[in-house]
Length: 220
Ligand code: DX5
Ligand code: ZN
Image 1: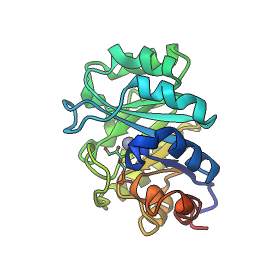
Image 2: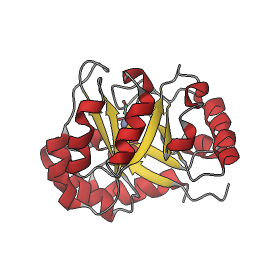
Image 3: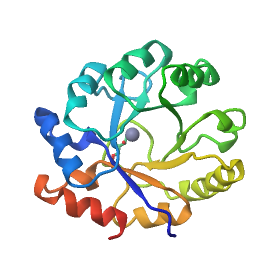
């Protein structure tokens, strides 16, 4: 596979007491995007961060903020995340109520739109969305927590999505999120992923290790 791989560290595994420093450290360590996991304790069983934190982090890196919304409803918060500095806004179609409307709303805010597929969500939910989106995020764990084990059944889904994307001829990122390590990263890449989210595997060992951790995920 010669496709260059983007690494989008999930700051969920960063030191929350020093988030600005952590974002600067992963930027300097060579990450491509910065993945922000937003959880509401309702759509998923965990609560994390909101637009105020995204806004506070924005001056710490010029790299794209890849904001993964695990909230329901989605639409009332889009403008806040856009204004806070999100570049890509992804959401789960199950969070509803109307995924097509949500994609339109994200695009109207001038941001890139992504659809997130949970492990049990079939690819055909994209049939009437794929021509309008910029990113597909495959969850290789159930959403809610970092540090879970990679669900291998998602490799077939990644391959199916790679074929769907190639057929569109459009530039749609194919991102994988959950349980990505130096061992599972090559499987996801081989299946067709071009962007990997990694929380635990990026932040393990502290700032001195971030560059090596990111390089290991790229397979270099
Ligand atoms: C899970 C989140 C992931 C997660 C990744 O709901 O979307 O981004 O934090 O964490 P690791 O890389 O530790 O599996
Ligand atoms: Zn995520």
